[in-house]
Amino acid sequence: MSGKDVRELQIRVAGWTARDEVITIDRQFGPATYRALRRFQSAYGLTADGVAGSRTFAALDALTSSNGSTKNFTWREFYSPDVRDFTGSDVASRAQVKANVRHLMYKLEALRRKLGNQPVRINSAFRSTAINRSVGGVGDSQHLYGRAADISVTNRSVSTVIEKARTCGFPGIIRYSGHTHVDTGFWFRQLSAQEASRQQGQSAVAHC
Ligand SMILES: [Zn+2]
Image (cartoon, rainbow, N blue to C red; front, side):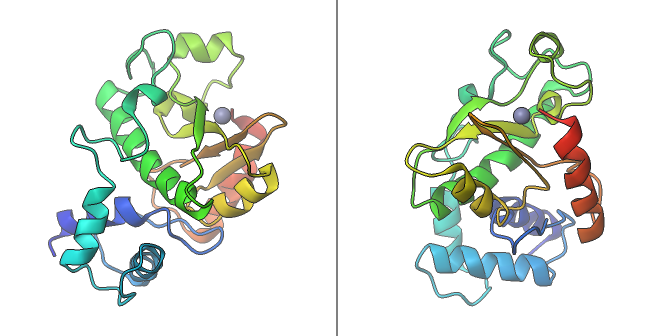
């Protein structure tokens, strides 16, 4: 597999981590990617051999929509309500936001699967700068980058959602009374586990 192929594989299995782990998208098929791939295979009824063969790719492709979103989520669900698009952020371009949302979607697909295929409702995801200001979001909110979603899941307790989300590669998880905030943090930084957990602490104060 080329580095580009490994990168794409990493994006798609990034929601199948160990607890409080974040897979670095670094184009290297390392131990974390191998273990994530095995968990994915196991969850989808495939032989958990950590080899990305044709059946595994078929399962990964089945999670992808023709327009580039994932199977159970639409781009529209992640739009900012004022612009109905991924424009309007002062800190990220439309293309950057869209790429970040795609990463987020694959992790949410993993969460959905781990919750027994319960629909994950997206209450708020990408926010334009104007919307972020109007809802009182912090200036560097992950929502401005398309890296965060406020979710709710019917028929599952918030505690269950959070517990499962901790195994889906989200460095930031915040509990609210009506919803749960999950974010993919500073995706383009190379995160060590320590940095990731520190970031989670910061995130708990700063974001949403
Ligand atoms: Zn939030």
